[in-house]
Length: 355
Image (cartoon, rainbow, N blue to C red; front, side):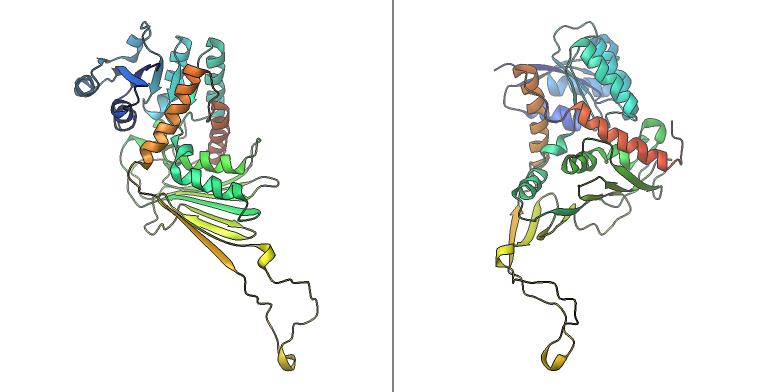
């Protein structure tokens, strides 16, 4: 089995707690961390101990190395586009953390750089592979809920924030921090190749920075369900992640449990339109009520390991692309649409220091 030699840029929450942990714990033999770039000395020393690799303070020191198959860009959010493009132009394949970019123009520049240099450009949108989302897609594709009318997604919680990721200058805020996950899922389900109609309302409530911590987005496209997406740090009673309404039923669920309820048209009482007043016995007023035979199902999963499953799914597609030439499941072009929508959301809400 071919092994990918990987360099990780950054040992913060993503670089160490996500990529470093997954790659160092993986028992498949597909990955090896050969180097870490991290400006903080203690983090460099820890990385050398944990991964048995080399470590440098300046990522530019990696440009001369020939033993790196993939660079994982887990630098701070605002550095994702320029650093990714630098490595592409130095002949490296790059897996970039989310948010991929602040603007669609930045995405276009990275895609051009990847094509110019004949290198792989991938985006770490692992939520596409989350078990609950895979299950939701199966249910929708089965057609049991009928025509889908609305998809409501909430990535909510309650919390105050005071770190760099609540600052616009660092490409922070709920939309760029958390939003890439539900937005990727929403656009994947919307399955509309063009820019949808976008309505967005943002607010800054409990953050100590100048970026938003409440986001409400409505996406509309011809012949597609209405998408209602919310990313809020102000919701102490969030009780679902997905709520989907269809012509024959409804789905509701979260990360570890999904339930759906539907009826079969063949089992429904035959009805026809009556335009005259409905009457019961003795011509008493009557409401058009009927009894439908409802069917219900439940999907549950142990929450332990579900995040790792999603990470493994994303890394597997990158591995297959580099070793077998298979196409990526999550492409930069798909994520470009996500960034284009986010850019429009910020255009509609021009508060704070939008750089």
